[in-house]
Image (cartoon, rainbow, N blue to C red; front, top):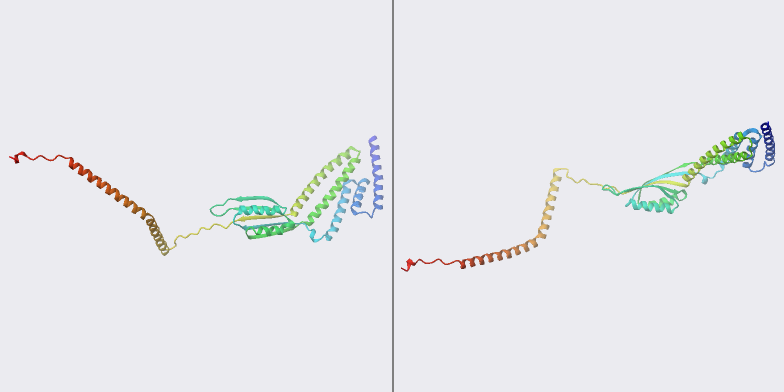
Amino acid sequence: MSIMRTRAGAGKRRLIAGIAVAAAVWLLAGCSSSDGELSGADASYDSGGGYAEADAVAEESAAEGGDGAAPQQAESDRALIVTGSMFMTVDDPITAANDAAAIVRGAGGRIDARSETTPSEYDGGAAWMTLRIPSDNLEPVVEDLRALGTVDEFSTQSTDVTREVTDLEAEISTLEASTARIEALLLEAEDIEDIITLENELDRRQAELEGLQARERGLDDQVSMSTIELSLTTEPIVEVDDSPGSFLDGLAEGWDAMLAFLSGALVVAGVLLPWAALAGIVGLVVWLVVRASRRGRARAKASEEPRPATASADNT
């Protein structure tokens, strides 16, 4: 019985509150449309319609307000996502990448990705970068990047997300108002079933609101910061095949090789000739010294040998 009296009392309070809010809406009809929408939504709930019906009224009013404001939107207020790519040939890709990073950061941007390759026998290395440039400074930054080398290709494309941004803002605004309204109703609720239902619905809507706000932040980042993919490479190293292709080409190459050999041999002979002359002189001196030494030894040996005795028979 106490529960029935409590529910009956709550119903009476809701009815009285609904009548009061409806009167306030009628008296304040000249106020802003947003205040009128919230009051109407609250009245729908308090008069027995429930929070689902109140949200439907709020969403319908927000949608009508958004459609009415769209034609009056200025061209400068359009939300554009700009992306592009730039391919450049530079002398030193690593140095050019450092300069490009300094240019972008100096303009208030950032580097989301960067990769490099070292020079090889076929090329002088390369660098790839993902540049995030403030949309308002895109053109001057691109002009500064052009000074780093030769631009082989540059292209940009834009996507208009104005309607998506506007709809997302309207959804967030409606969901915020609905969440705040459920929080207020939760403070006034007395029945345990109503409290549980409102808490579950509040959790669901808060999670949905956080998701929408995350999408809004992502869109805002894409709109405010343009994305440019920058590629920095060097001129390829070309190997020329100069092998002879015919008999005459081979003959000419052989003749040139022979002349080159003879020329080289003459250079070597010219370099070695003074040394050869010096070696000849030294060899001649050594030979003369050795010869004189041999003759001296031969004479000394001959003088030391005894003379042969004469036969005594001859004297007889």
